[in-house]
Image (cartoon, rainbow, N blue to C red; front, side):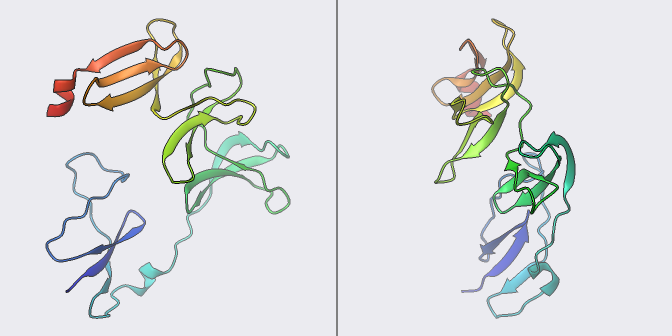
Length: 186
């Protein structure tokens, strides 16, 4: 059986003739075409692009955050599990933390919300101050203001039974954005 290894979005995929490739989390909208980078390998053991096999180091991006351990500036680095903040004085200071979303924690007054992952890789969102603050949610927080209490931050939830809804992180007020029939259609 013939197959090829193609590279797109920083990941490699095995594709057989006539097979379509579903790739998530790319910088493209629904229906946009995404160009695949060069074919790296074919089943006849021909390597097409040896340069693409080498890892490309992504340059660090500056941020306005300060290190929680030493007070130095932090930069945004890219690791194998995504982007994170790291101290510029590494290896003297090994301070790292998740990138905040820009939404305040509804449980404690000082923490920000950030995306985290379970041991099995499922995403959830929680407070940066964990374990002092144990707030967490399975639904993605979005920067929308609650009409009931005025808090900036609501959970976005889409399912077949309720449609698309928003729930306030602070007071629990629920808003229906799209009915179940509208979600099913489109």
